[in-house]
Picture 1 (cartoon, rainbow, N blue to C red):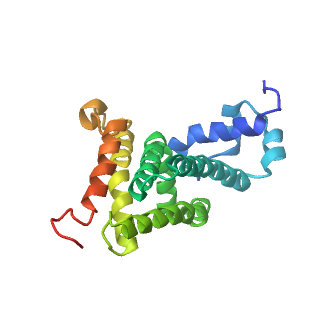
Picture 2: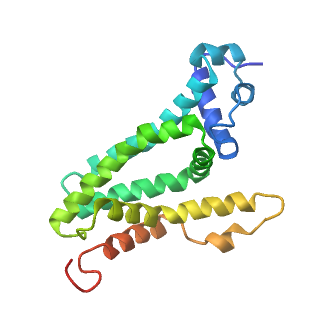
Length: 218
């Protein structure tokens, strides 16, 4: 029996997000999402019309959660130094990846498979937070706390350096969940994605990209 309809749209979105680590965005099916949410098909179509619109809404809300945290980190940083503002933002990025690593790996798989909704999601949203990181990196370069390397180089190094640990853990978890490859995850990941470990990783990357990291001014 279906539950009352008052928050059906929210329950459907929540159900989809819980399913996405296994299905990705491309693998979501109307009947399966509605069944998990306890919502009848009529309410699904009433709120979203079709699966394409629903998938877009799910991805928008997922990114909205992330972007809201990013803006909150910037506001919390206030008038702190450029380096500390960048540090806060990078910690927000890497902790969101940690918390949602299974979903993000599933979305990446959809992108590599050429799923149009996943590709459009990246095209529409990725520039929004990259613009923030670019501005913070430029501020740090002007303040003399980051090397004056080309922006694409320094940003790719920074993002890849801090995101690699939670992504690697997520991939190992995915492998470990298979029937042919089960591993004791604690032995593999240890403290790789604790708050302390992620903070140290961000600090290491910022220190490595400082003008004096190689013992000379850039």
